[in-house]
Length: 257
Length: 324
Ligand SMILES: Cc1cc2nc3c(=O)[nH]c(=O)nc-3n(C[C@H](O)[C@H](O)[C@H](O)COP(=O)(O)OP(=O)(O)OC[C@H]3O[C@@H](n4cnc5c(N)ncnc54)[C@H](O)[C@@H]3O)c2cc1C
Ligand SMILES: Cc1cc2nc3c(=O)[nH]c(=O)nc-3n(C[C@H](O)[C@H](O)[C@H](O)COP(=O)(O)OP(=O)(O)OC[C@H]3O[C@@H](n4cnc5c(N)ncnc54)[C@H](O)[C@@H]3O)c2cc1C
Image (cartoon, rainbow over all chains, first blue to last red; front, side, top):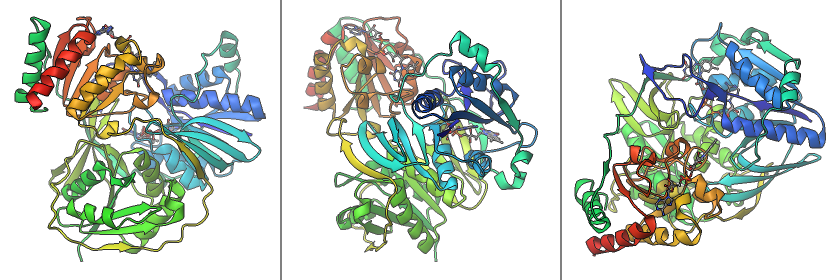
């Protein structure tokens, strides 16, 4: 099988967010593989080990994205591709990202594409379904189980807590939800091997794209932090009195009862 | 002829989801003069649901009933919506940021080569621009976005943009449209229901959420009782789900549901960053935890340091009193 994983690097979840001039300050921040994309990498490896074939991990990013790609290779992916837009493109949105990926996949044989359900930073969840539509292949989002038998694909999909049992066929793009698997940690030999695995770097020229083809449809005009929450009030006194005070505050001050 | 905005409504077990009414209100905020056209799709008759959409502000409603629309698939729904768009040429679309909304809207946007701003919590006017505000970095920051071209396409997060008051005197046309939905490549064979009956978490006004501190599935019983007297729903931390006290359907957080109720009561939850990602934008947060040092108190409006098994029954009694 020709298996592809779409990978985005994101801020470490634990990072404190600071904003400067309407932009997220990311100097010195730790970046990680988007947690949902870790499920995608893991599932790709599992499916390859079962059915044979090759796992290629693709990211659109900058020079620094090599780090996350090497991690995916160390987990067990076979190849990595970095589409580096740093030099050529200033602005972009989900339309841009999907268009670049479409061009990348244009003359490739694809059986299975795995993406994350959502990237935890910008969190639109658009890229997977957008790309599937551009490629004209089936798409199932938020999957928690995947089995492939020949061309037939059986999927369990999380729908707000319920589980849908879905049947479709290859080629398909799926987006991965928590519960699909437990991503492995890269092993030491894995990390050593990853250094020698192929990592190809492309620019949008190599994909026959012009800036105009991928011009963003939306624009971020500002980023701001939510108002600092006032320190909460920890109630005091006998528990009975605390409960009375709480109910009164909820009813009279906050008017939520 | 005035411009049209489509509002794609959602029907679940014969009821229209509240977020669909909120989407109508959002469409009005985007353009008060536009004709709001509701769209409803299903396997069964939708006339009553269509009329209800009108009482919440839609000017007219187009319904499509077809066997292939019984279960939601992006393919089936996509075919119907694209055909309606083709016929009506709206200047924009609004839908809820629900499981279906998240799955369907990027595909339609892709087909229309349009931008899409997902998970909007607020809409502002800035001169001629309509500005959409959405949380990023798990609610730790917000961004303001605008469209670069004329087409507007947004999904709205439930419980943030208030619906208009129901107005029974409003009237409008509900038209059934015949669309031939072609065979689907992807089919839903079965649905295993796991979510508790009653109120959907993402739309609940009040949520009582339990964590590992609740200690057992039995321990959740008082929480259900509290939720009931408050007319709310029960949620959980991943700690509680991992320990099998409740189903993952209830999980709130970065990898669970994102909720913004008016009142969130966190019971026996420590307040890990991944949990906060799902609830920190709630309007009022109450924490009940026996450890005064736990992080949940840092984001709570009100905290009670104490044993939940002692506090919850008292709380239920007190609320019953003031509600009586
Ligand atoms: C050239 C360019 C310039 C950009 N400029 C800006 C900017 O100025 N400001 C700004 O805020 N954002 C910018 N972006 C980022 C862009 O707005 C989105 O972050 C991106 O489209 C992904 O959207 P999302 O974060 O909502 O991901 P989602 O749609 O939530 O991601 C879902 C899944 O799609 C896949 N995916 C997402 N992004 C990528 C990727 N980059 N590579 C491979 N797979 C991916 C992953 O599997 C991910 O789990 C730019 C992007 C590009 C390509
Ligand atoms: C990638 C990733 C994603 C994650 N996603 C999520 C997510 O979506 N949602 C989520 O919730 N977590 C998520 N987590 C897990 C998260 O990090 C925490 O482990 C989890 O939230 C802890 O659950 P908890 O607060 O119930 O348990 P604990 O941290 O064990 O806290 C239990 C609390 O109960 C209190 N307590 C105990 N007994 C009593 C009593 N009798 N009365 C009152 N208080 C009592 C204790 O003082 C303690 O504060 C994620 C983690 C990772 C790494």
